[in-house]
Length: 192
Image (tube, one colour):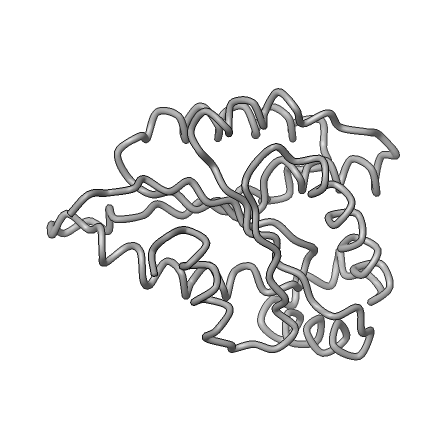
């Protein structure tokens, strides 16, 4: 079976549902391309935002992860938050514009694609997702924001995606679980 070696970047505001959708896509791609050994090598999943984007080390992290993505050229990779997140966080938290065009040039060469995960700009929905996040991860309270802040984050992603040179799809994850969104992503990846 030919391995298409997907390089998939899931972007979107916090609480959008990226991790959930990634888990569903991963569950399809990883077993399909697994070598059959004792290692889950059909798809590698990197959660890149571990408190580093928006800091002085964000660009360094992008460089290193991109080096890794270029080096791992024989299997699928999914990235949770990447260059658009760095741009969003730099703008919102440091009032700086981040030029991601050089990263996109490199991402284009490895045929990376973006899945932009969005949700309805409904504060009640965001409040519920925030409560769910805090129930699972109480430490998130240290950085929790108001629902309007998450909506503002999303609006910035929607502006920045228009500047992207990469192929992308925008999916509405207001209602989860929703198998049709996963089908839409797989079709975009030409897996269905």
